[in-house]
Image 1: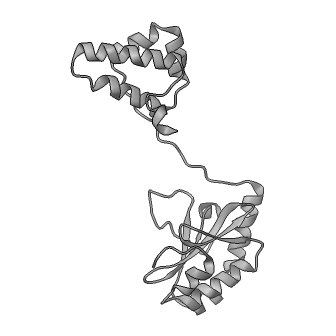
Image 2: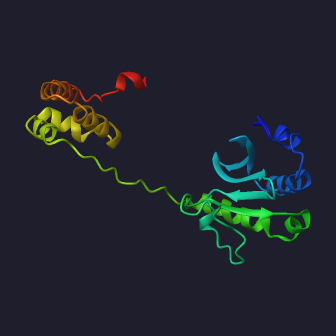
Image 3: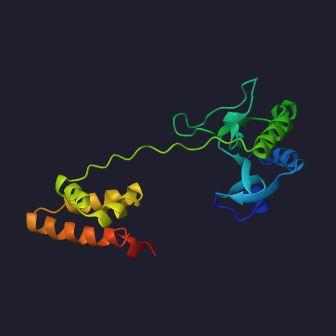
Length: 198
């Protein structure tokens, strides 16, 4: 199915699961959530924050909660569709209208809205970046106060670019030239590839 630009277009493009998704859509719209389209599928938001989404898949329709890991889920309806990848996202799968009708979908949505109201969120964890700085570059930075301050203000991605730039030099004279360039840019608080980012 091609990416839809509206929820109506998404629904019209379904060849399977249309009734099930129509029911899920009506349940979600009975709450205070605002309807929109994100990543080509229906998404429902609370004050601009993604709360739930619905979508048709090959063998089921899915209702997913962006902060689903915070829901009580005593009955165990929710699953982590990408174990080890997603921390907060949880999905609820349905194979029939009857399943949806019997399920406490509205209660789960309201619990999720309340969590957003209270500001509860699972925040992504950033993996530490291992940067191996060539000794010669590290010494040069430590010996130059302004460059050292500039280095300290850089995000890890910029530091990695600088270290790779110096480490990739095969000849010592090239490495020395690159270190001088790096020191000059650090004094000016510039990233190596800033001119390409604009």
